[in-house]
Length: 338
Image (cartoon, rainbow, N blue to C red; front, top):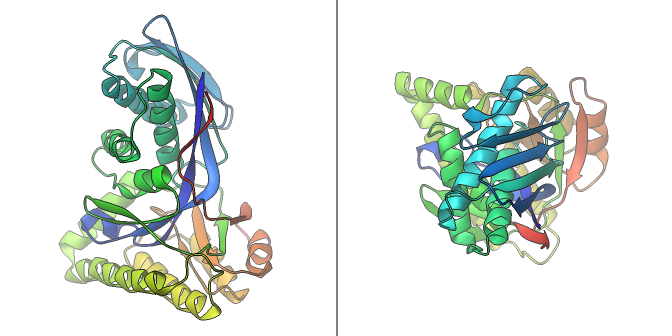
């Protein structure tokens, strides 16, 4: 059995705009998905996933996920979880030139589903890595990130960007612009995450921005403004000492950009009342800045605060189900057992 784990992420800047070729800077965080893969003697895939729905599920199927039997959890939860697992299996089979390979797969995750923290990307990255290693065909990180992107692109009907999967594969902070993806230096920023317990519909939210951008010139300008903001943030990070604690002045400037970024995303219609409430609670508690992270519509916000004040404030904010500090994950996907 081969076991791999991959981190989730927060967006420092740039979600939604990255879909239109603007840059984005996500950063990996120490919340991880773990996937264990054991080759079978047949072409079946048996998946046990106790953390990907409220009740968990176990399912075995042959061929595509459409062949699987009914299971005793709501079908949309199974579709969401199994779509990514199945895509990861197909990418692993293709990479190893083993189209009939079967697996016993176990998935565990401490990343909230659909909350903007890259849960699906982490499952796909860890799944492909574990399955290819189990078949004796480990991939280089660049190829792994590319295949994980293809898997998400397929499942999300072409709505995916490379940001989540590249960040989960590489760890640390990364810069994504179109097809260009590169790790960048960044200090260990004091991230605090607030989670409202919900999840936005990524496809619907991305489609909404696309329609708004096509209908109104100001929306297209807003997307470009997010790109300009990201470039300013990149310059700040480039000037920082990645091996030292971030200076207060740097946190203040990055926080101001995060505040602007949230306002621009709200103007594009992808925020939500719960997200706005958590953003303002963080700011009122003294955070340097706060914004939604991910597609929006519900899910998570990320703030910068080296003190405990923001985490405490969020924990008492109506609509916030969980608040936690998130350390930068300097290491991306990794093998934990083989």
